Image (cartoon, rainbow, N blue to C red; front, side, top):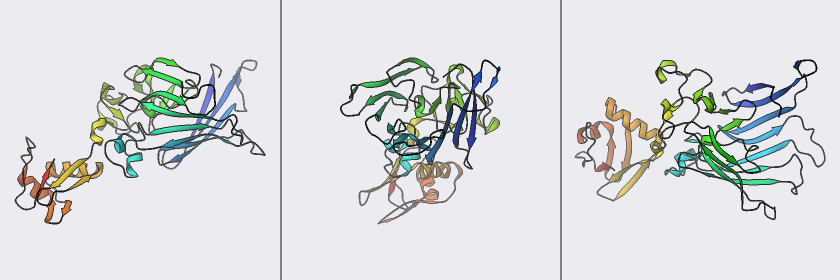
Length: 304
């Protein structure tokens, strides 16, 4: 694409970007052209992008307006032990994009392209492998990426590397603006900061434009709202010492459990055949300073 483009975005009621229209610069008139050269519509499952629809294509015999399709699996939350449907969206899709299918805007499969994604530990796309059987690039890396700490490209290689939008933190990168779309904000990786202010204002820190507290190697951001550690998606387990039963509590329950310990709020978090465990009795059995695991007098559980 040319060096000068005007980009127009539209959003739905959830704040998801559902349309991107680009207008080129007319050198002759020195003004923006009225007709767009690109009009992409976005279709989501939650916050995960599942389709890109070309708004400039007229559907007819042999032609489709579906330009690309994306398949998602368990993201960092699901890979850490939450195999439920919530494990597809719990980490904002980071590390969960399995593959993509590019149609070429035709109903024929002869010009289709299909790729699968490979990641590093923080959910950044490292490679994209061609999986179209019989193609000249079958089984080879169609894209390779290496990143600076805040998402800037240290190295990029491959025939599909520029065309693939999902890269750092499994987020969509706009080639026109060179920014990553996080859902709530846009990240300018070259400058290691957000383009707009923190929606939480000073509650998210005094620097309203800082990305993951300037600690990108160890923290991630799901939707441009709050930094967190990838390890926090590992589920916690409660174990019944009498009947050798155990239960895994998910991210939301784990957060409630932590708040219960700190704020002394009551709430049932685990049941088993020999009783029940609530936060009030857990507080009596656990040293809140050292978090030492102990058996409970009232019930039978211990936190592992």
